[in-house]
View (cartoon, rainbow, N blue to C red):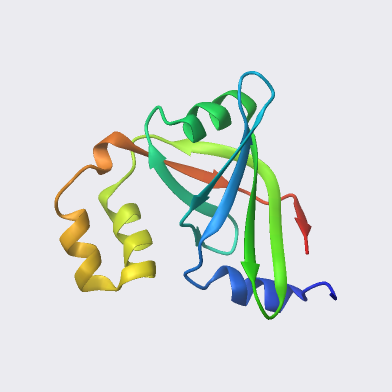
Amino acid sequence: MRAMTPEERDALLRQPRNAVLATVDAHGRPHAVPVWFRWDGEALRVITDHGSQKHRNVERAGYAALCIEDGRLGYVTALGPVTVADPLTYDERLALHTHYRGEEAARKIVDRGGHERMVLLLLRPERWIG
């Protein structure tokens, strides 16, 4: 399969797809989990609970990979440093849920609260594969 062009990669990253976030735990073991993400053109934005395994792993290692698959084009994996924004804002959580569910459904979920117990992981790709 051929490599994606930057335009194809950007188009794929702007779609509401599931991805797999890969981090490394304190014992050097891989930790890979499905996540939702949002691409802003500079960083991949992932939300997780404060203190989750994903959060602890990126706090310690400062690095992660995110893989997004497309049946037609193949896949793209972004590798890079991760910073944590804590606490998560209402607007950031609303943007992610709107991206996947639409505004009305997103507001119903986000208006219940909970974002105060979450963090935002910002992966800034240094390397692309696929």
